[in-house]
Length: 572
Image: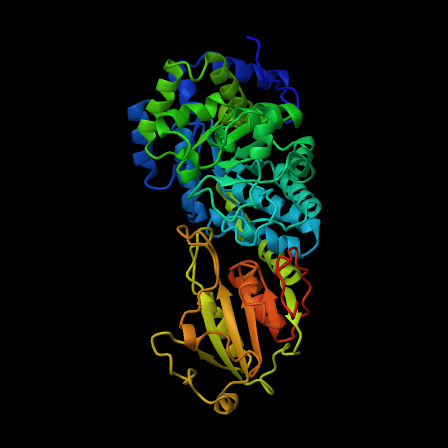
């Protein structure tokens, strides 16, 4: 049969033998088997129960995403999943912070913004390469990254530290390097979130969001970044629940506002812009279909098949597996998905699998990595790389009053007020302030931690005379770990004790803030004259942060964003 996708061209580069496998596999599949391949599932619970459910409804998906699990257990679980199906599986993850997002022993390379703050694109390459190697040790082969979004809006709760920065050229350079590291390590890279997040203050998890750039502005920014990655061979793109009104109107001048579709359902953005203008020949996968943005425009029964009909090749996650599969089948039976469109999508899926040799590994019994590969998690090189990124990325934004470096002989008593530190959507861990306090105490500081349940212990703060507080407190330090927790629409400061914790003594007692996540807290509290951004909530980052606060190593990071975002402040 003649394939509608050029599998010899970029990004597949298949030889004749691999193309023969794709053709033969496709020809041997019935319609239900093809429709099953359109799905990439979230394997969150019991893997055996999931496989029983798939057998019951007659579905073989193209792959699955796994969440945080110990390496040996995850390798075994992925192995059983692979062995259960005839066609080899794509095993994917969101490795925004390194393989530690999925593998408990994985290296926490830091958020993309922390790597951006190092100013060293080669560290982005090394992060991608290490992520690929560690992921391969458990059998994962597809990263939903790099994030190619530009951090234009400080109130975007979903982009923020996941972006390399707010300069398009810099974002292009770092995403390119990270993607190359992944690919050199044998992993599939996926540029996201098409057509570009970071403009809106809203989150596609909760509402269909908007990229509001003009056609000309988009071409120079997001379009430039995607174009570069496509030229360099990125094999997949994640299409998100984000509208791009300017391009929708460019392709359809008479389109009404309520007819503009999000990227994941937008045929013009897929076929005319991504495949046409930018020349992308690879695979398009939707962002998670459980988000509100996906079904805000039409009922789920219509949206599920429409995503494939309008250009996506893979449908990501489910609300209910059986029901979504039925929706997809009905969409095919009703002619929403044509046989040609179905074959094209499945061809790209099989081609992607063949591009990293999954068909050969399946044939020769090497699809499951040997257990010895888990030794990579004992290699000190991973920890050393995470330390280097933290060391070069942590940024001293302001030190106008000379509060830093901290010295226990001069600033013995530090009053610490914690903001947030409750964990979030991309890092469920919390309580990093405990390590921060512990590290300060090791260095001889007397640390007094504000307790919202006992606000007058150890220091009666509210209403006390400033002169008395000066005798008890040398430095007030706000330790901030403010992330979205999966249900928030914003990541902003909430002062825990209100009058007990607001910085109303900022001109009377030396006061500082350190943020180990959100870099934009100065938009809420611009009067802080001593401020540090560390970008990532990880132990190695907190430990390195304290070293720098105490002058044991110099601050090397350079902010990849404007922390004030152009807002006026008399001390800016």
